[in-house]
Image 1 (spheres, rainbow, N blue to C red):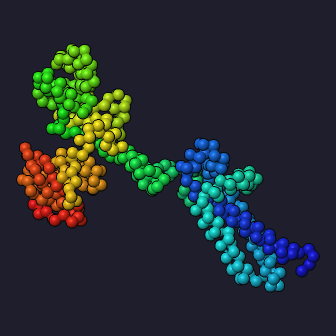
Image 2: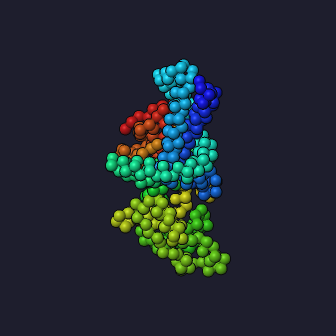
Length: 430
């Protein structure tokens, strides 16, 4: 070995430094591309220096990848040259096969797999510090990066692809956002997770799914005696009630019960005064999605709407509270109402009111009854039977058993239900 040739120690140190540099470029690429874009934007908006640098680099991914690959290929080629020189000094000849095998293993293990694995597991710890060096390298190597990008972008267009950056793939659809919420796991408290999922469900649910059916509407018949009206108002748990004449189809308007309290204090309460305090009813179609109706309630500053079908007939009513309960769950002020529809039995079954909505059953009991057709349990069972059943009729639904306990006035009043996989004796089918 001549005095002009570098020593073996110097070559090995140089080779090691080049492998470290190659590992840096490999980990930087994986780390930058593995960053959570939404967390990155959040941190950048909160003046996180590393996130701001990384976000700026990712605005032009072609330039980012260009500078990383230029640097990585340069150090890898230089490392290959030094490895050849090391082989000559050790073996006295080039030994290309041994050099290629050893170099491949070293680069693969120490400059590719290991650093990329670490970067994939901890992208922020790698990407944010790396961004400082990458920005500096991009400024230094910009002319080279520009030439490489011009040629590569031209080739991309020749192959029929768009070379411009497209951010549309980063925009989450509702279903993708649902998946994100599901996978939030322990990072998001379960009640908040449930509320977020319920909000996403609003666009798939209409007022027809949650309305109070017309036969259950508690209202004021203005034809009743004034004492009966005041007694009804006094015992009501609601803040607003519809006012009608003889039947709900002859709807007059909506009465805020607080107005009646004012009349009582002034000792001027009578039917005429009640009618003066009644406001014009707000009608909505049954097909209105909940998220749209929620916005309308907010815009119009209203809390109750009368739901009509396609023929204009009154089908029921819906309140702002009903929609909010779809998001946050039950918060009724009537403690009796919170449990009157469900009665757990010792054998594991439930006695359920026939007027209970299928959606409420699914939500409260974590069941999966079909809610796409009939809205109430009574409607679901009569739809399956296609007739008004007698009591003690057993029905097998998909995954559930239902035994009709009480039928009154052509309506199923009470049903005993349990899961098909429980220990309850199987009911007979009809």
